[in-house]
Image 1 (cartoon, one colour):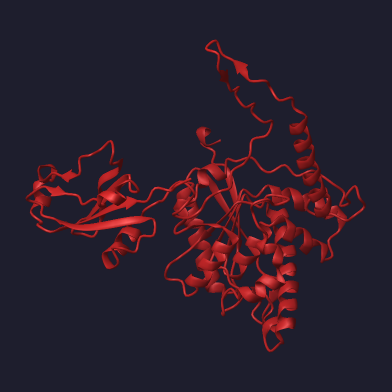
Image 2 (cartoon, helix red, strand yellow):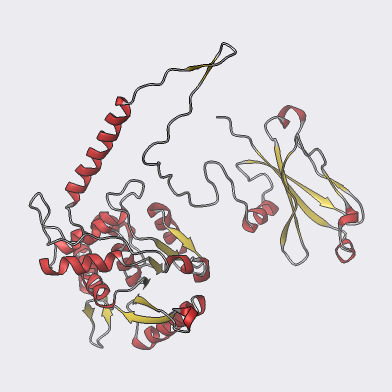
Length: 416
C-alpha cells in the first residue's frame, strides 16, 4: 500500500497508568509521536483502555485502592487477584473492539498488559467473570492478532510492584516460559536507570525472563508489524471434554494431556526406528552413518543477558568497572597497563603455568572523552602471538596524549 502512496493503518492500544487526565494526554501524544517516527510508512491509530475502577474525577484505575488500604494481608491478596482478573477481562474486550497490532502498557496498565500476554492467566480471568460463550471466538481472534506488547514501569500502586503479594495473588503471571502449554505473546520491557523501583524491576524481569530495552527504537517494530497473526481456532466455548473454554478451543488440562501424549508418541516412534548397521569401509574399518534429521527440530531456549552458555558479551560498563576493581572479573583475568602514545606497548600476559588456561585475549583502551575502544579484537594467543601495540598506528592527534589506560582481558577456557 505504501508503494502506491497509501499509508497502511497500524492500530496501537494504550493501557495507561492511574494518572491525572492532563498527564495521560501528554503521555498519549508522546507515544503516538515516537511510534510514528519509528514507523513512518504507517498511519498510527491510538486507542485507549482505561482501568475499570473510576475515582471521583472519572479517572480509571486498574486496582481499587479500597482493596489494598487498611486490610489484612490475606484480604489484600484476595482483593488484588479479583482486581487483576477484573482488569484483565476489560482489556480483551477493548482489544476485540479496536483489534490492535501493538499494546503499550504504562504503570498499572503495564501489569495488566503483561498479564494479557499470558494465555493461562487470560483463560482463568475469563472463567472468573461473566463472559458469554458468544464472545469467546472474537476475544480469541483479537488476542491472536496482537503482534507484541511493550510495558513501562509496571507497578501495583505507589508502593511499587509488591511482588510478595503479586506472586501469591496471580501465580499464572510467573509461569515458566521454557515449556508453556500455549506460548505467550512477545513482550518487551522499557526500562530506565533513573527509575525509583529499578532494583525491584530488575529482580522482576530476571524472574519472569523478559526481554528489556532502554529505548523504543531498540524494538524491531518493522519486523513485528509484518508478522502474521497467530492462528486461533473458532470455537463455541466448550472443550471436547465438556469443560468451558474461553481463549482456546481446548481447556488447559486437555492441552497439557495432548502435549504429554505427543511427547510419548514421539518417544515410542523413536524407539521403533531400526538401528542402522555400521557401514564397512574399503580400508577394513567402520564408518558411522549420519544421524537422520528428526521430523520436528528442537527449539533452543532464548538466552538473555550478557552471559550465555557459549558467549560472554562485554560492554562499556563492564570495562569501566575494571578501573575500580581490576581483579573483579569472574570469567578470567584482567591486566591493566599504561600506554605512552609515543612508543610501542607490549600487552601483559599470564604466567607460564596458567597460560594454557587462558588461550584468548582482547584489549581495550579508553579515549580522553571516555569512549571505550577495542585496540585488539578477541584472538587466539596460539595463532596470534603478536602482543605489541604500535605507536606508529596512532593518529598524530591521539599520540599527543601520553597516558592511555589499556585493559587486557584473558577469559578462562571452560573445560567440558
